[in-house]
Image (cartoon, rainbow, N blue to C red; front, side, top):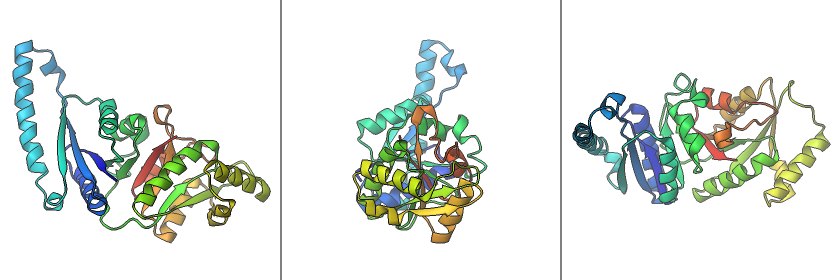
Length: 277
């Protein structure tokens, strides 16, 4: 991993994201690019051109000072940190910056269940996920401060999940961690015989250029909902991160015969990482 981008709004939640980035940077030698998006009010924008320039300069200097103070943390002392200030809150700019910097990861902080209730219908986190072609790691209550050892990828073995799975596998391989595929069978899901499910998994692994032997490593869970099944298994095995696949601008992926990714992300107490389909 070479570069990690962290949007910073000076909140505790963005600091949790920054701490996570620092921890991963220490493990991989990555550079942390801290980004603050300076949002100007309509009142400022509606003023005269000369006034706007003066006002923008004032806010920019004020933000630079606050940003510098915010980044003076002991946990960042041995890490290369590059501060970047964007003048407007345009979330496509974050994706553009990630591409320009050839970043490996975007890390965002979130309030957790309460703060994510609207995550997939208009929040800042959703907007970043919608535009980002770079993987996005959403940090909840606590930062990641220990080595990631157990990662669960919720999968229904559809063709859409192949590309995100390959990306996720390659990403976590770089930090010395394997991922486990989990399929949840529910009473409301389309019934598949063992043979049908095996054929679906064989096709999936063939497309992922993996041996059919990987079938034996897939965990199949039965529960009343996919969300409950994933959380039950994650708690049982002590998972560190949950992975979901996203359609980007088209919204979150509809896997397991329905739209349940948002439920997993909204209610998970664990960090959730998204890979674009």
